[in-house]
Image 1: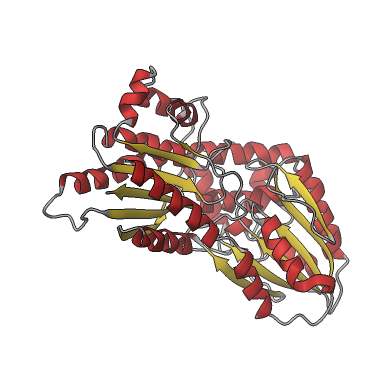
Image 2 (image 1 turned 135 degrees about the vertical axis):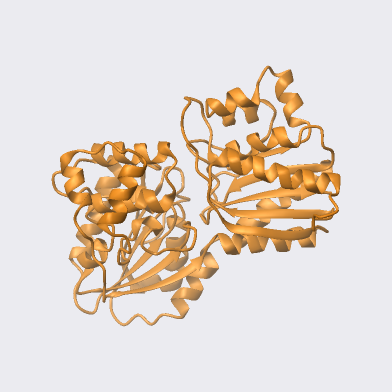
Amino acid sequence: MEKLYKDANVIIDRAIKENMPGEAVRNALKNHKFNGNIYLAAIGKAAWTMAHCAQKELGSRLKRGIVITKYRHSLGDISGIEIIEAGHPLSDENTISGTKKVIEMAQELGTGDELLFLISGGGSALFEDPLPGLKLSDIVETNSQLLSCGADIVEINMIRKRLSSVKAGRFAQICVPAKVFTVVLSDVLGDRLDSIASGPAAPDLSTTEDVMAVVEKYKLKVSKTIKEYLSKETPKSLDNVETVITGSVRTLCESAAEIAASLGYTPHVLCTEMNCEAREAGRMISSFAKEIAFGSDISRFRKPCAIILGGETVVNLKGKGKGGRNQELVLAAAEGIAGIDNLLIFSFGSDGTDGPTDAAGGIVDGTTTQRLKEKGIKITNALDNNDSYNALSAVDALIKTGPTGTNVNDVAVVLAG
């Protein structure tokens, strides 16, 4: 088991490093010709890293820049760029004040100017300015409902983009007559530009019918003012924007597979669009693990192997515990592999933070369930209370990387020796 844990740590560490946005940003800038004054706005969990790389490439050509990122995701000063830390996954007053600064900068742009817009996961919460008649509390309350009901990121962004003056293509409209060159690090399955950070510089593909269907599906409680905004259409075309996608969960899974192969495992990437309830994903993944462990004649998986799934699961919040989707996934998987030797399951978020915790995810093996029992912890109770963090912490099964500077969804891996 010691080798499996060592190899798991190598896969986690190297996969994250190989998906840092620096090289991708540099390549995007080298392939783009800037003709006028260059301004910069960067939003999201990887905003600091992306802006830092851009500043190194552009130097004195960069006239002004603003970064809005999550608390503790800034790694120091960047010459000529103002750095603002704000709330995630729920916006706060720093979000509003930072966004207003970006809006003011955008409103001052003229013909011939160009805004380099760097977007990464978390941008929806970190870049926000409520529409007239709405308060931040309205958006936070609506967003809280969406996060707790099990809505996926596309559905979440479909709602909140329509309550904002900078989402759904509206920020690109503010920048007119300037051009906007957008470099995107995708955290959305399928790389939908209108959903990544709620599409501040992308035409909105959703319709009012789509939006109201989400409201009805999850029985959202919304005010009259919010309902009026949800019934208004958003920009469907923009003529001042050029966009490049620089990374996604696909590249993260490819990295994990290549690293696993270099360590002697046969890799199998099963999917890159895993999008379901976290505990159900955990149970499904544990069933794959059992097939490997017991050597089913009809299974194509043979040890040593690495089964890799990428995507982003959701958690239906019912309890008052502490945890994140990756932690909940592996805790649910632990029961399915109880007593099985020489096999482990781990899942982690590439940004280094899983839910409102300091962990990136969790890692479990065939002894985890028994060790939890010895601590007086029942997996069913922990899952029902959404308390995966404390359960995994009790048996030293958390993955902690710290904020990484990138954000391209999550990867779950079955590692069998």
